Amino acid sequence: MMVEVPEYRVVERVELPARETAVIVVDMQNDFVHPEGALFVPSSRETIEPIKRLLEKARRAGARVFYTQDTHYDDDPEYRIWGEHVKHGTWGWRIIDELEPKPGDIVVMKTRYDGFYGTPLDDLLKVYGIRNLVVVGTVANICVLHTVASAALRWYRVVVPVDGISALNDFDMHAALRQIDFLYKGTLVKSVEGVVFT
Ligand code: ZN
Image (tube, rainbow, N blue to C red; front, side, top):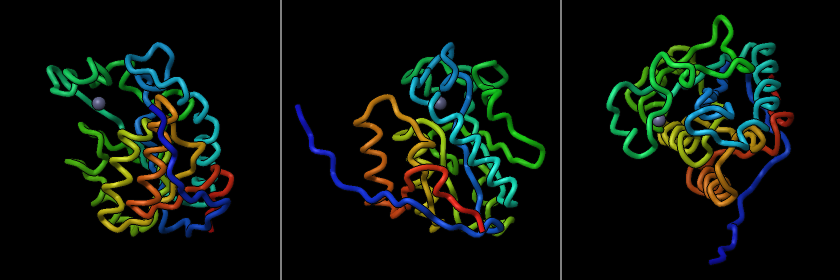
C-alpha cells in the first residue's frame, strides 16, 4: 500500500527568548539510543550531535534544560507491549553518556509516553516562567509526540528541530511531523542550527 505524505511546514529559523524557553530532551537513554539497548532506535544515533549542539547553545544563552527519563519498575504493564526496558536503576535506564545532564539541568522521570502525565514537569516549567519548549529526542511518534501534544494542550509554544528527533521508520517520522504541525500548531524547524536563543 502506498500513502502520500501530507504537507507540513518546516521553517529555517526561529527566535526564542532564552529566559522563557526550555529545551526538553526526551528519553535519550541507553535502551533506546545505544546499539546494545533493549529497544534500540538506529536513527537516534544521528540526533546525538545535533542535540549536543542545541544544548550547548541553550546553556550558553541561559535557557533551562530538562530531560525526560522513561522509567519502569517490576511488572510494569508497558512490558507487555514493549518487553522490559528502561527499568529503574539499570544501565538501559540511564541517559546516554554523550548527553549526560549537567548541574542545573532537571531530569523528570516519567512512566508513560507523555512527559507531563503524572510528573512535576508542568509545575516546574511554570515556576521558571517557561512559555516556549524546544523538544528533541526519541521516539518521534511515541514519547516525543505525546509530550509535544501534552505541551500544546497546555498552550506552551512548541518548537521541534527535525534533525533532533528520530523514529523507527519514515512513515512514523512523517506522521509525527504532520501531527505536530497540523494538529498541535508546533513549529518545525529544519535543524538545530535554526533555533536562535535571544
Ligand atoms: Zn517505556
